[in-house]
Image (cartoon, rainbow, N blue to C red; front, side, top):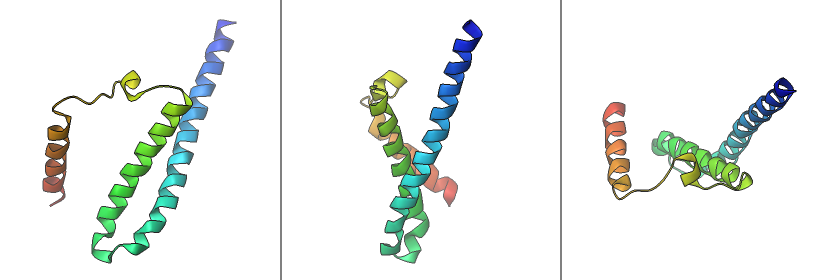
Length: 97
């Protein structure tokens, strides 16, 4: 009996993971239609921003579906979050260059 319950739980999480990938890809494709309005020089930057937005929106959708908040999954804004964000952007730019 316990094995059956665990199997059902594993199946549920596998299904949710696959669904997450499908929803992310769908959002990414839809949002990518906006790239044609951006000059070619900024296509890669736009691609990265669109990917980030698609991932964020997909996460928000799944959290709303599960009736959870970001803090429930360990994501919380702290006073130094913005500073760390921009530090990460600078490090990313340095790595890219």
